[in-house]
Each structure stands twice: as structure tokens, then as C-alpha cells.
Image 1: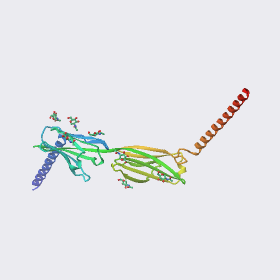
Image 2: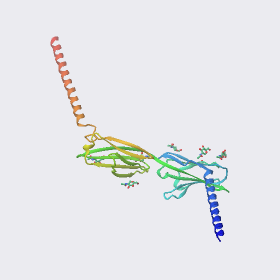
Image 3: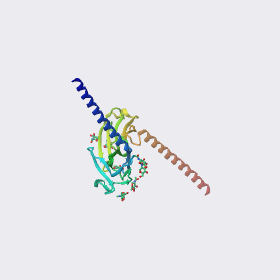
Image 4: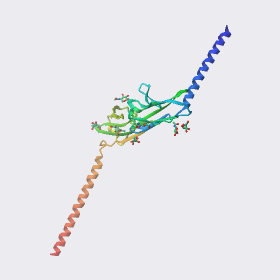
Length: 276
Ligand SMILES: *[C@@H]1O[C@H](CO)[C@@H](O)[C@H](O)[C@H]1NC(C)=O
Ligand SMILES: *[C@@H]1O[C@H](CO)[C@@H](O)[C@H](O)[C@H]1NC(C)=O
Ligand SMILES: *[C@@H]1O[C@H](CO)[C@@H](O)[C@H](O)[C@H]1NC(C)=O
Ligand SMILES: *[C@@H]1O[C@H](CO)[C@@H](O)[C@H](O)[C@H]1NC(C)=O
Ligand SMILES: *[C@@H]1O[C@H](CO)[C@@H](O)[C@H](O)[C@H]1NC(C)=O
Ligand SMILES: *[C@@H]1O[C@H](CO)[C@@H](O)[C@H](O)[C@H]1NC(C)=O
Ligand SMILES: *[C@@H]1O[C@H](CO)[C@@H](O)[C@H](O)[C@H]1NC(C)=O
């Protein structure tokens, strides 16, 4: 009785082991047979080429490129077969084409990339009799970051604004003043770029005079700091002392001009008298 149970257990175990090893062999094999770059990056509006190479020779019946949609399902983008030629999904007409139709290599070029092109792509070689061999590559579409920080002061209240535009969405935080969360406003532009404005409101602006406000913007895994110095007049190019100095300077110059002119006239007058 006991022996039987043990036997059954063992046979089950080895059967599962067999399945596991078969699955892993199949997985490894398909991964090995298509050589592909895991990631590509492209700026919004640029061109990009995605390519896959088959590492072993096979009889290929069709090459298919697919892209994942928002729900993660892959849909056909383009196919090629000797029999039917190039077929491009209506949605992508005029946006891409094959650049390589060699039996062991496929490449597509995407023109004037937009934010909808962001995502993962599969290349599938349908082979006979080997079945489908596929590779996957993920495309990151981005737009360079533009950001700035400014502030104004009224009635002793300071309002600071950190503005940034990019794709994917930039993330804003304040390092000075520390732990300030701020209020955020998003705007999506027609070309897919996103503007984020983070504003903070501080009651006592006087305590910040001579200090810097620092806003940190994260984009594409990098962070950049944007700074602005708080001055008494709230960011105007003139401050009271500067204005007074400039006025005094102009006053001195005017006096000098008047003095010179009067001296000159006296001299001229004397010469004229002498001549008569
Ligand atoms: C595919 O092969 C070409 C040469 O034919 C090579 O330049 C390219 O880097 C290869 N691409 C990948 C993803 O292996
Ligand atoms: C993208 O490709 C098109 C067509 O080949 C070309 O006219 C355009 O200059 C390319 N754009 C860039 C940014 O390379
Ligand atoms: C792809 O095929 C070409 C000829 O058709 C051959 O020269 C090349 O070595 C092959 N590349 C690979 C990676 O098998
Ligand atoms: C796509 O590429 C094929 C083959 O290289 C070419 O015959 C066809 O004219 C191209 N189509 C477009 C729209 O560029
Ligand atoms: C401060 O600047 C913001 C944005 O430039 C503006 O909306 C706001 O009215 C300004 N406030 C004052 C008091 O000037
Ligand atoms: C801005 O976008 C982020 C991320 O999409 C979202 O979590 C946040 O609620 C948005 N804020 C506003 C004010 O729309
Ligand atoms: C996208 O739109 C924004 C806002 O209109 C603009 O600043 C940016 O230059 C545009 N980018 C491209 C690549 O067209």
C-alpha cells in the first residue's frame, strides 16, 4: 500500500519535472532564435527603426509586427509574406513601412513618431515547420524637458510657480522650501506633450528674502533643479537701492554736463570779446 503511494508520488513528480523542463527548453529556444534590442528611444516627431534578426535559418511563411494597446493586447501593425506582399494596418497607413524583407531579418521604420507609438512591439516570424518565433522590443517616445521657476509677491504673500513641459509627464517637487507639496495643474497639448504647473503660496515672504526657491523636475529617470532668488521687490529687475544708485548717477552726470557747458560758454564768450 505504502509503496504504491510513494511510487505514484514519484511518477507525478517526474512527470511535472518533465513538463517544466520541456516548457523551459521551448521558452529558451524561442528567446534565443530571435535577436532583438530590448529597448529603443525616440524623440517626438523623429524617425525610428525597429529590427529583429532570426539567428537560425528557417523557411519563413510570414513576418508580422504587432503593438500592444492600452489593455496590453497585441494587435497587428504590419505583415509581410511573399504571397501577399506588404500589408499595413489601416490605422498605421503612411506612418511606417518595412525597410528589410530579407528571410532572416525584419525591420520597420516609424516616421514622425507620435505619443501613440509609445509601447511594446513584437516581431513574429512564422516558420515552417518550426512554428512562430518571436521577439519583443519596447519603444519609449519622449519630448525634451523645458522648465522654469518664477514667483511674485503681493501684500507680503509669495506665490511661486514651477512650470514644466515634456513627455512622458514630468514630476515636480520642491526642495526649498522643504516638504512643500504645492497645487498641481496639468495640461495636455494636441501633440501629446504634457505641461505641469506646481504652485506654492507662502504667507510670510519677508523670511525668504535673499534665499533661493528650488524646484526639482524628474523626467526620463533624470532630475534637474531650477532655482530663483527671492528679492525684496518680488523678482522685478529693479530694487529700491539699485534704482536710487542709478538716479544719483544720472544726477551727477547731468551736473557735470551743465558745469562743463557753462565753462565752455564762458571761455567762448571771452575769446569772442578779445577778437572785437
Ligand atoms: C541584425 O543584423 C544586422 C546585420 O545584418 C545587425 O547590424 C544588427 O545589429 C542586428 N540586430 C539585432 C537586434 O541583433
Ligand atoms: C524621417 O524620414 C523622412 C522620410 O524618410 C525624412 O524626410 C525626414 O527628414 C526624417 N526625419 C528625421 C528627423 O530624420
Ligand atoms: C541571413 O541571411 C543572409 C543571406 O540570406 C546570410 O548572409 C546571413 O549570414 C544570415 N544571418 C544570420 C544571422 O543567419
Ligand atoms: C514600403 O517599402 C516597400 C519595399 O521596400 C516599397 O515598395 C513601398 O513603396 C514602400 N511604401 C511606402 C508607402 O513607402
Ligand atoms: C502672480 O503670477 C501669476 C502667474 O504669473 C499670476 O496668475 C498672478 O495673478 C500673479 N499674482 C500677483 C499678485 O501678481
Ligand atoms: C495631473 O495628472 C496626474 C497624473 O496623470 C494626476 O494624478 C493628477 O490628478 C492630475 N492633476 C490634475 C489637477 O488634473
Ligand atoms: C508639442 O506641443 C508643445 C506645446 O504646444 C510645443 O511646445 C512643442 O514644441 C511641441 N513638440 C513637438 C515635437 O511638436
